Image 1 (tube, rainbow, N blue to C red):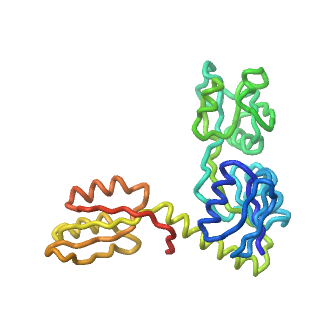
Image 2: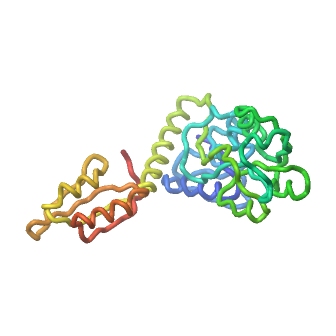
Length: 283
């Protein structure tokens, strides 16, 4: 049985559990439980503090983990990463008070910077030849300038609203992060096989999230133009309609390209465009 560690609460926890469910794995979840076992896959889920997950996986207490890449790198175990999962994206950024003068990273020489990520920030500054005084604090980093602890901060940013609410402005992006799947590097052959099965399911779910299934009608005269816009996985599926001179075309479109491609399809004569979600997508 695989032991998978995930964050015990918060957005990353919710997204991780949703991914596991979408993989067809069933389990009971309760807020007071620290672990649960799947009913239809050899998987046990451990609910832990996110900062503890890399160490638990490194030591073999857990076989796998889902954790923010920022947490993994800060813990010093980047080699545990198996693959990015595409959700819980954020960035680690430097910020200064709105009224402060800032022209470049050189302005941080000798400055006091409060952060919960001294390893990542220290490496970033060292690569640029900047020597600053790092003050490691575990929470409420944004308040540091207003209480005189530091002249700048380095913290996780999603929308930036927290920085604005505390009178700060973002000046440098230090690190970009997303949720990643990590694994102990000494898994048995049996557990490696289970990991491959789990990855196969996760990848099918992630492909489905990134793509839409599209069905449309088009005149035969416009078929070449339509096919050029809809390559599909290999090529579109084309079926003759009862009405002479028309065909139905079915394909897969990447979510990021959908609206742009749809407008182009209409421009070349496509009609009755139907868009459907994809539950799983296996390449």
